[in-house]
Image (tube, rainbow, N blue to C red; front, side, top):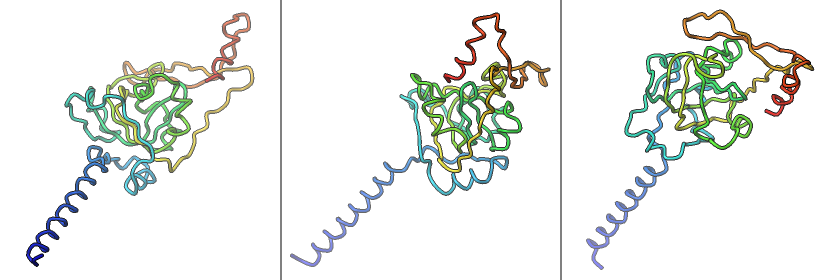
Length: 232
């Protein structure tokens, strides 16, 4: 076997190995999901976590590409959402998910201080046949996330309490840490959760606060409300 033939065979093998490596990178790396510009309001722990490692869990809606239909998914910050109405967006933040409260915040502090000043997030498209706030809540709530979906402005969510809605969610990426659970206050014995409408700060936007209500005992329907809420 001549030296020229051996050199050519070595070159061909080397080129083949390089090509195989490049193909593996293309298939293993998800190029289509860049890290959103999280903005200065998103807490630093989330920024550092997202920059340091890929998400620990990811969920994609069935037939995602078909539902996108060639539309561009715009990477925005939470503060930029109001100017992107009726568009597909990709946004980062801290997600809280429980019964009648699923919203995206810039930080854990914002969740506590201004719980209603946040976009509502509809996750039913990812898990249409299950109460996701119960089955997936421990894995997704109070964690740093990236959400893809269609944003609509105006009052949204439960009783129109929230600022806008990220609906028809296409993808949810979740980082397991940091995780600081937000514990909802337990109603006093004999009471149940309720809301009270306040004077709107903006036209068309409902403003409410959470209150504890005691069922009217003469109404048998009210007497079972605490048990129904406890089931969730």
